[in-house]
Length: 279
Image (tube, rainbow, N blue to C red; front, side, top):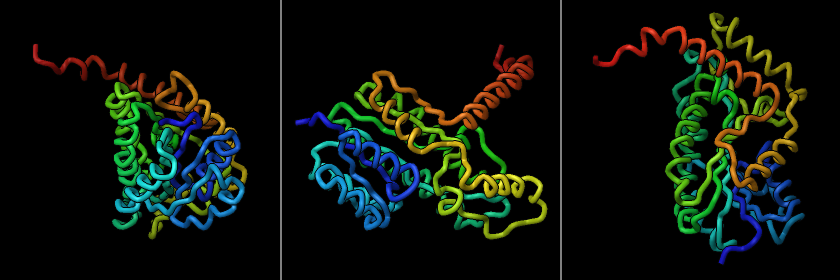
C-alpha cells in the first residue's frame, strides 16, 4: 500500500545540499531516510522529526551498506519514492598532479557509488511502477573547469549514465533528473574539496588560477542552498520534470556558452566531418 506522503532516500545528508534538502523535505511533511557515513551527525534532525526522519549509516562505496539501507528503508517505510544521489566530494588538481589513489577514490564515490545506489533502489521503484532518481552533478559535469579533470570527469560519466537511464526506466514509471549547480554557499570548497598531493609549478597559471578563484569565493558563493532545495522539490512534484536542472546564474551562463561553443565548432567542421560516410 503506497502512502500519500513521499519517502525520500538522500545520501550524504549530514552537510551541504543533502542536509538542506533533507530539512526542507521534512518541513513540507514528507519522510526522509537520511544517510551519512557518520549518522550521529543527524541526531538533531531525527530529534526534530522523530515520526518522519530516519538516520542510517551509509558509505556509498560499500555494497553491503547499500543493501542494508534499502532493506531498512522498505522495512520502515514500505516504499522509496525519491532517491537523491548527493554523496560526493570534489578533487582539484591537474591530471598529472593527482595520485592514482585520489583518482580511484573520487570515481568510486562520485560515479560508482551513485551507480550502485541506483542499482540497489531500482528493483523497488520498478515494483512500485513509480519513482524519481535525482543525481547531483555539477556544472563541471557539463562544461568542465581546469583542475577538475577527475571530479568533472566522474560527473560527466554520471550524466552519461543518467541520460541512458532516463530512457530505460521511463516505461516503468520512473523519472530521472540531473542537477547541475554552480557555486553554492555550502561547505564544498572547505570540507569537501580534496587537493592534489603534488602541486607543480607548470600548472599554477591554469589549475592554480582556478583554485585561487574557489578559495576567494569561499563563504561568498552566490548560490542559496535553500532555494536549490526548493527547486529540486518542485522538479520532483512536476508532471514533466527536466532531465537537467541547472542551478544558479553562474551555471546558466557556463551552460549556454558551452552550447554556443559546440554549435560553432560543429558548423565549422561539418563540411569535412559529416562527409565521412560511404558513398
